[in-house]
Image 1 (tube, rainbow, N blue to C red):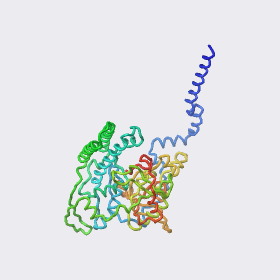
Image 2: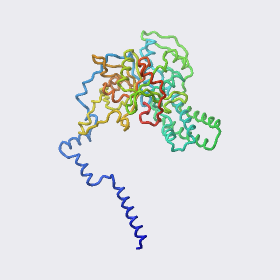
Image 3: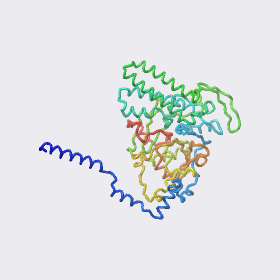
Image 4: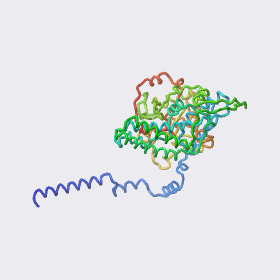
Length: 466
């Protein structure tokens, strides 16, 4: 073997050794596995735990018996509310919650035993508007590659049934509202999953077609004409599933004194104007996100449902500040839109949200120690569900001890349709509350004058409530 071939041979050997080393680095070796296995020592106690945990519901075993009777469902301050709603198998909690903040005002104004706005009416327009917004995003980003992050995000989530407070405000300002009697629920509005699949399938197809038209230098007016035709297909799907929203309807009511009103004809906008004397711009969205700087204003890109509507804009402040304003709102009989990570430490049977409900650490003899910021950054926690904050209990110094939440899972869920959250749970898993500006101090409202920091729509903290 000559000198050049010998050197080449040594280089190849060196290369293979490097590859072999790279492939084995970080793997679970036999020696490492021995160390790992030492954490589980097979004893009669560990076998009993294995039998119990592997054959039972985990929450039943981790349920903290000492905590069950520690919290009652009595509250010093409570908003006057009537009736529990049910979103069924849909992700429309944001719509139910937002309208449940407003409907007590109608009940009080007309002295009614109960009242509900039609969610089906607003959901129809929500889906059509979201479809239009998706197609507009596709047109705007048509010259970007298909693997561009914004394009990928748009095609992954063309539309959904979730949302936040500003989504409701956008719809009410544009389409008004109708009573439930004017457009009732259908199977598709109560069970949105399958209609959503059909809509998203069609929208993805339409999005690809628009990208191809623009790539082929199609004139903008022809692209717009085609977009309108596409929305016609979306409208047809929605109408078949939910019926067409009324342009005009009649409404009469019977009040708590059993007196029936005269029948009157309305449009959705005239109805909303008559029954609800509220300026939706008077509400401010407050959020506690310790993963970002406090006392700052933020805006979420594309986090809206109407093309010309408002994005989700919020003030980020600590929970301790939010609670001050929430307490004042409840004392003044004003309910609030509220969203949280409802699945964390929820005892459905007791209707209780408490950080002491389940003791997983004792069950496994392993510490679980992330704080709120760490849970957000690691995607362990985030806002998942919108409800209504309607009550608060306090100690002798007027400091909150627990909160009453009106849910939209029906009267049989939790504690007669309500959830009680301890104040400690509120600190850990509450993310946003929408409060009337009159209950917020001037220092906090001044933050609204800041230029908001624009955050991307795919940020893990900003999935819609559902």
